[in-house]
Image 1 (cartoon, rainbow, N blue to C red):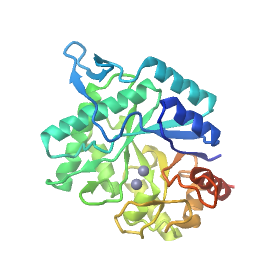
Image 2 (spheres, protein in one colour):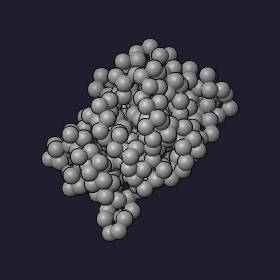
Image 3 (cartoon, helix red, strand yellow):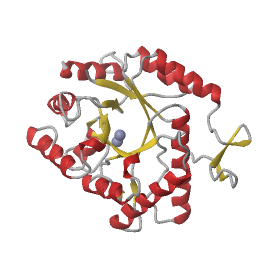
Length: 304
Ligand SMILES: [Zn+2]
Ligand SMILES: [Zn+2]
């Protein structure tokens, strides 16, 4: 049985995302737990050593109201969602050579893990980061150090981090699986880290998973770098742009350059078919059918 869902909007309340996922017959759900284009206001609590965030004008340990967290968990249970995941803010750059931005990113990522923990979401997926004015090697060390610092700041209930492979635009790290493996191996507690594989990003980074040879090469590279035991989730997106373009443009399943053959291999894969799979495809309707509904239907047909 494939586990399929999508990234859903939390507008009007976190619980709305879970309700909408249930109505669309999803098995799993990805959300932003807050506005992804803003940094949270944070300060250190000298007493607990933990980070506080501002909510309702007051510094608090919980950045989500308990009533909202309870409503979300209840909606997840009602919708019978088997897995949830949150996506971290796009502003976070754990590879930044700029100390102020790096610290801001560490604090923001810690709050991401705390918010997810409060919502009983086990994983927060994050793009590893961009080395900007430094080097790839320096960026990798910087990310590993950031992860170690986050693990010092976090509470016991906080979620864990999934590193997402990227398309490799500009100085983005994580387009190569070896870079992801290097980040993991440089952290002091690698057990807390996992990987989320985005199909569009892997294709844009050079894995021709539209054909058997490219698919096999990708499986082989996962095996010899971070390993399948680290792989915890998939982002299923087709790609508007060609293989190796290093450009990240998501397309409806089967209508991009990866195509239906590529996605059939993924949903039927013995190595990945059991993992939660989240769509981040356009929401726009195709021939009158809702975008998510159409893409879920295509994937279920391919898996059958
Ligand atoms: Zn993704
Ligand atoms: Zn993308």
